[in-house]
Amino acid sequence: MNLQYIIDDKGQITGVFIPIQEWDNLKSKYEGIEEDAYAVPDWQKERIRERIKNTKPEEYLSWEEVRQQLKFG
Image (cartoon, rainbow, N blue to C red; front, side, top):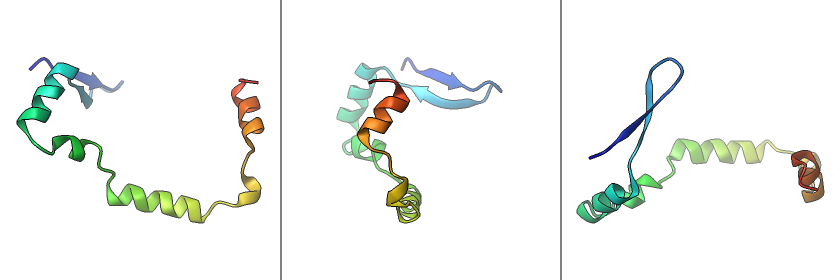
């Protein structure tokens, strides 16, 4: 397998890049692996729920404001 490691500025391995052909081979070899790759952990779901609960609609930006801040418009 031709893996490429992703390393941070401290030299620690933080991720792995798997070429698409090898990923496709793994998906065919291990049924269900793709679902695990895209599963969102419960702790992340809970964090999003908390953030949504703590937002105030009056603080929301309109699409036009977002575009201006991103300098698309």
